[in-house]
Structure formats: structure tokens, C-alpha cells
Image (cartoon, rainbow over all chains, first blue to last red; front, side, top):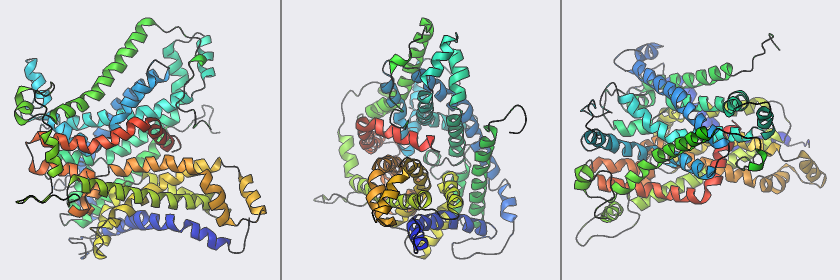
Length: 296
Length: 306
């Protein structure tokens, strides 16, 4: 298929995608790295060159970045260790083939389609300390121990209160991915294991889960990066309030972009990219097939 | 290949089965419990959107509304519209529900079109034309999947404000399309590799150039991929909030921004908030009822290929 003007054709074919990619992904990354070395009090005025000072300042208490990263990591850990096992359990139960499987699947997946803004406002109502449903339930059963300022405002419960809507929304998503994996396990494998006398639990443990490892890997990466960049839900809870117990990096990013801290905001952006790549690579590395007899 | 029967299930294949009765009951209980957890907030939302303030805040929190207050919904439709005497009735007033809805439709449709065209062309150049460095370029495109959209916020904001394009549809369409391109290329590559190269070759022998091959052979065969990707991008962009709230003004608000604005003025008026949430969510859920299988498949392809 070699032609004289092939180079030109290739360039023309790549042009739209490259233009979008360079203009909206590559350029912003370079520009963020560049901006992170300057003050950038306003959009036009770069201010003084400060070197790595912005990055050092990030971990100052004043900018609250360290705390926000810890929060994001806690959310990520909760996702990986609570949400994903729950999804896996549901996927395994559904994947075994039961009556009404499609119906369950469709309902479980439905929350994924609802905007996080809607979910945030709905949950804000549920958490309302005066007439929210949780308060009412505690009153009804005469339980005590609910923080009077509301679950979202209480320092100890805030992160959990943020996590619950997330899990409600995204269990279905991860369940669907894993379900697709479970369905992809060849029935012959299951049958063979069954014939060898494996119980359902053993089939799941030794046949199904090992074969859906790639899907689990993708789910873990999505869960971690998703937690690191969570914004919508938390923004709805936070509105314009500050000093919240559930601040996350992207919330600070937006705040500093419009709070005349362009340099700091850029440094946060760079840190977010690094963290996302770090965790993606880490999870990939953890899931790499290792040969027990040394290098392949 | 497995794509077609990824959700289909043949019970005959599972014949050797002696599942513990108790375990089976336990599985059903677990499934039903999660089903109720999933549905309860929706039920709660639907009911409180039809209640008045006193019912919501105390007398009747969980039950069905005692008086079905459809007025909440009319009030949502009247939001953002100028009132006067006589009230000026106009649809598509800035900030009204219809306007935000149509903004969303416009922005998302154009973003999908742009992303799909760009991705399809790039995929063709990467998978079907042989040239040096195509593998490298492909892996560079794949990095885009991991990059969070948020990091582009500040640079794009500052460059858009310099060229005075901040408050426009373009300011949303371009970022949405750009951040969908990587995933679209990934999925399109998977689909395009399933198309035999013999087709290209025979087209070439019949005198078709690269462009001819692209338009007459590849594009028609890629229709299923485009549908799948279109749905996926739609769902990613439809609910996007950060860019939509930062880059637009009242004339360009999308649906999520409309929803978030419901709270501002009506902090305790939960009836109208509930009605607004329902109205913003229902179109999507209705589409889902009719297309659940396709929507689920598009998500599975997106992740399984990743």
C-alpha cells in the first residue's frame, strides 16, 4: 500500500486526534509543570520564579494539601478493600447463573448513570442532622450516638459519609466489569473443577478469580485513580466552605485556581498526574505474572 | 469475538451442580438486600419530590406523599424564567431547565462526533498504514487514559480566557472530545484489528486509495464500534461537572450545573430540589430502561479492552 504521498496522508489522518491530544492534554501538562515553578498570582502575571518552593509549600499546613492527599488515599483504600470485594461478591453470585440475573444486573448498574451532583444532593438530604432519614431512623429506634452536627460535619464520620454514596454509586460499575469477566470464564473449566469435586466456593477461589485477574486489576486502577480525582460529589457537599474534614486534592485545585494561587494549583495538578501514574504502574506491577522458578 | 455473547448465558452448560440449598437461599437474600439498598434512595427521591415542606421535614419522612404535590415540578420548570406582570412565558430562557437540557444535548453530541471522527482516523493511520513510530504514538495516546481531566483545568482556563473563548460551547466541547479520544482509540483499535486486512488489500487492488479504503471499507464496518463508543462517551460527558461549572455562564449551563444551582436559592425547599433532581435524572434512566444491554456492553468493552 505504499504510495508517494503516504506520509502526507498519515499526517492528515492523525491531524484531528493529534490536535486535540496536544492542545488539551500535552500542552496543559507542560504548562502546569512550567507554571508550578512560578507564583502566578493572576492568569497573566507569572510573578517571581520560585523553583520547587510551591511543591514545598504544598505540604505546609496552610495549603492543606497533605491532609487532602491522605483523605483521597483513605477513600482509595476504602474503595479497594470494601467496595471491590462487595462488587466481586455480587459478580460471582450473579455470574453463577441465577433466575432474574439480567434484572439484578440492570438495577445494580443503574446508579452509575445518575450524575454525581444529583447523588450528592440526595445524600445531603439523607444526612441532614435535623430531618434526614438517618436522624429519623435513630429517633425511631431510640438509638443514640449520632453526631448532632450531622455525619458530614463531624470530623470522625465525614470521610465515611462521603464514601457511602460513592460505594452506592460505583459498586454496580465494578460489578459489571467483573461480571463480564466471570461470564468469560469458560464453562468447561468450571465443569472440570466440579467433576473433580470442587465446591462452589472452591470453584470461585481457584478457577474464577484467577481467570478474572486482569479485570480485577483494571477495577483496582479505576477505583484508586477515581478516588484520587473525586470531585463532583465532594464539591456538592462542600459548596464554598473551607476547612472541611473531607477535602480532596481536586477540590483544592479548583479553589487555588480561582484564589490567585496559580503556582500552587499547578503544583497540585502535577502531583495528581504523578500520583495517578504511580498507582497505575504500581498496580500493574503487583499483578504481573511472576514465574516461581525465576525469570522467564 | 466474545463481545457478542459477553452477557448471554446458556444454563445448559452448567450441568454438574449440587449447590447447597442454604447457600443458595443466602445468595438470594444477599442479592435482594443490595437490590433494596440500590432502589431505596430512588424511591425516597421520588416521594419527597412530591411532598410539601412539612411532610419532608418531619411528619412523613419515608412514606408515600399524603398529598401529591405536582406543583413542585411546575415550579422547577418556571425556574430561571423572567416573571413579570403579566408573566413573560418563554421557553429556553437562560438557566431554565429546557435550556440547560438542550445545552447538554448540544455539547455532548458535538463532543461525541468530534471524538469519534478523530479517533477513527487516528486508529486507521495507526493500525492500517505501516510507518515508523506508529507503535510509539499509540502508547502515547494510551497514556491519556490515566491522565485526570482536572489537571487540564487551569491551563485551559487561562488560555481560553486569553483568546476570549471562555463562555462558549466550544470551551466545553473541545476538552470533552479530547479527553475521550484516548479511550476511543483504544476501543477502535480492538474493533479494527478484527476487520481482516484482506479487505484493504482487495480494495487496493481494485484501485482504491487510502482515503477510499477508509471511507468505503473501514467506516461502514466500524459502525458497531462507533455506536458502543458513542454511548460510552455520552455517559462520561453527560454528567461531567467540573468543567461545566467552571467554563460556562448562565447561557451555557449544562444539566449538572442546573442541578447544583437548585440548592443555592432553595436551601430548605426540598420539594423543588427533589423535583429538579428527578427531572434531571429521568431522561437518562428512561433511555437506560430501553437500552440497558447496549449501555452495559459499552461500559464492559471500555474496561475490558483497557
